[in-house]
Length: 208
Image (cartoon, rainbow, N blue to C red; front, top):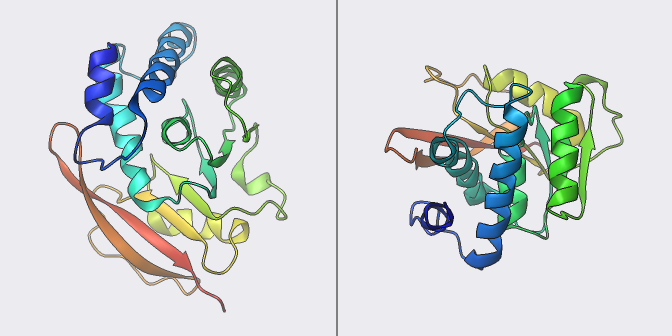
């Protein structure tokens, strides 16, 4: 399994410039915990460890192309920790807030943070709508989303002017309606591990 993890971390499509050995160890530990907990609670539909790596971990690491390594990132709807946990593993200096409304999934995330000895990670068992407005981040990320506009509206109060929202382009959403609070700064072309083309939408919060 370590060989597969190492291969993924060094995939040129991710463009990661990191120390691979410690990241391989932590990804493997994360995967073991996920497989163990997945027997008791629904974390992912995939049960095969290689498929989890190729579908979820690889997909999460694509977000590295739009995230600053030393920034504060809020992962809304974190679920099993995607994309937040893989981002934290490859960018240890990242300050991370994992937002998840389901208590059992939060227990899993708290276990991952403890077992992997991840520092500067906060797990919030709450709906994003109920978070205090004084919690600010440099970027908000979403992975499994139904609509970009909903994500932007939800994120606005957590970001200062210039703050970013990064999300994977929702399937079938070909035309983005303008949002008065955000500018589409960049559309980053990405591919899945198996070569399916998609893109990351990077929005910047306007100053007015």
